[in-house]
Image (cartoon, rainbow, N blue to C red; front, side, top):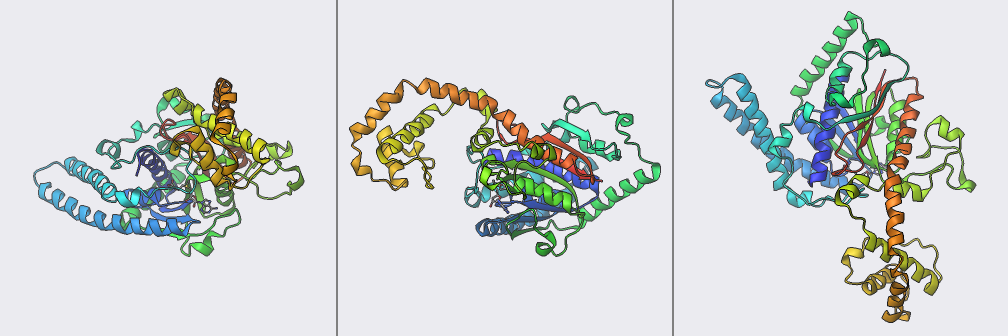
Length: 464
Ligand SMILES: C[S@@+](CC[C@H](N)C(=O)[O-])C[C@H]1O[C@@H](n2cnc3c(N)ncnc32)[C@H](O)[C@@H]1O
């Protein structure tokens, strides 16, 4: 698992586990689970019962294989951990044994994930939202032993939908957020007091959930299904019970549909969804000829629907850019963008092609020069490259070279605007939840370090 993925899995798991404890549930449904990194971690590290659903059979197969290997190693390390603890328990104070168990778990994860490197390096996600960082061994000791307080979680928007009650346990969920990041919430403001009896009931439910979790033998089942807003989970999961629905980098419409399923199904008590690939969203008002009412990816909320709001593909592509990464590295991929822009001119002027269903793809890094780039691109586009001599290709390069600065400025503007568009898409999802009567609490949580993982916001909500 690369650095980016292990960061995401660690952070998100911790939040999901705290929500599961708060709600007193142990079943998790991971939509768009891919190779199952999040799912397997939730089941093994937090003893949750996880169903991972992905539309790709190849991913399900990969997840099953990986899970089988992880389980084998997990059992071996667990028995070794128990032997270690037994050997020390007479001499050592109790907390020391717990520390050892924790250390051992950390080692287990490090070992498991590094011994499975072959499998893990196949982590070619169907639609990656950012440039992968280098592949490493995986979770480190310090990362595994991180306390909740160290979690770089940041609540950017959190409200109470209708002044309804949240138990005091909600604060233990919010405790994972640093104090300065949480809006000051006075219990009187949000009328969060519960009667003693209700508090007691919630505590008992949470204790029961924790107890039953520790008896479970970390179950994770990868399944294949294409999820839509109308998907009946009961048709896929026969033992569906009260659960939390999660999704890590659910691309395109899968993120909005996750929220739709959550609001429609009473068994789903909470949701934690991090979207990505906004360019794949379907938009109701993008194509004037085809704005039939239906379940579109955007907009979701009443206000933007009434306004007939349209983002457009270019804006949604812009929302996928990573301002924080550009700010840290101080570089834009100007040369590759310049190559792509001049290629556009060449195929328009020399081949009369304005639109094509074919994609050039990521060939800049594989090209030795601009001429090589153009030739490779023409092949991909199935255009006759023999009619274009090298000198003609270089003439185009020379003609536009002096405009590279303009391209850089234009792209910098796009990068700077990216967060505005992303926030529009996220607030649309949040407003959709706030319009529903059955939601007790919903908010946007900045879950990841945006330099490590640019699509870092989770939409989180709890049912009444
Ligand atoms: C960006 S990947 C994320 C994978 C995984 N959650 C992770 O973080 O490693 C998105 C995944 O969602 C799956 N997917 C996309 N649309 C889907 C749909 N409608 N139903 C089920 N799976 C879907 C893709 O096959 C892909 O594996």
